[in-house]
Length: 183
Image (cartoon, rainbow, N blue to C red; front, side, top):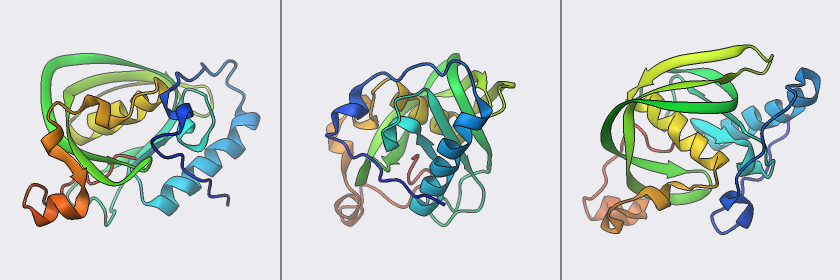
């Protein structure tokens, strides 16, 4: 088990576009994926993108079941998604509070598409093709943003809805949200 350091906002690597994974080499990817799962679990996240641990490849992992940080969130199957492509199925945007392991201690109200289709490959090179909505769609969009060098604060429309968790909570702007952190 190897827990990697998570890069923090301000590190220029988090603002770069990641490279496609070609070919998908199961043996070569296995140690990286194990490190990603270990790191995500240690941080109690719902997702993690490879660039967050300094690996500039188009790989994200996500998934959560019962998790104290997301007590009201629906289960999301544990997924490895390589070279993802997102298709918006409904242009409706929904605001939701997000956090990020790379932006610790902060939250912001972020608009995301409610319903998307994502495609890519799993850790064995098998195709993935899913239509999802709600929290699942939010997590996927958040993690895939990392692959394009986008952090959630860049998507916030009203900076009055962004700040430190304790301050937002003290001022009744933020209550404990189901998507407490998206990774």
